[in-house]
Length: 120
Image 1 (cartoon, helix red, strand yellow):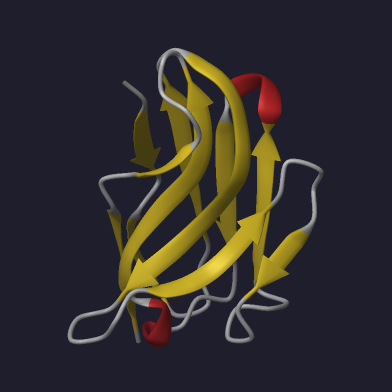
Image 2 (spheres, rainbow, N blue to C red; image 1 turned 45 degrees about the horizontal axis):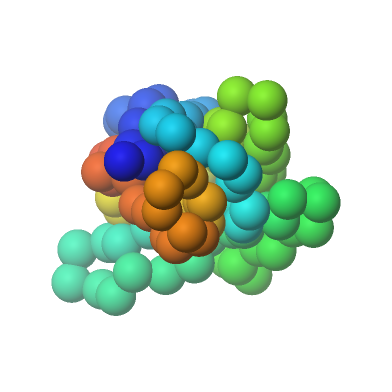
């Protein structure tokens, strides 16, 4: 069984920064696409950023220039550095990974979510 554990959420003021981490554990053979999504109250879950195994990156327009996604393949960990935060960034942030594990073939997994609150 593969588990994703997130950390790094919290409360900051407008203009502040936070760094989220998400580490995968279990009988992992390979981790492919990694990403972050978020869900604000009353809204649908939306893509924030993704990073492929080869390092190709995709950002939502709303976070371009402010957020940076990165990964450490040796640690099966994905990061999200969030700068210049605004109240519109307030949401529960979820990490996701496509993982092949023993004996499970490739499938997606989700973290438990971490709350990010930005006050004005």
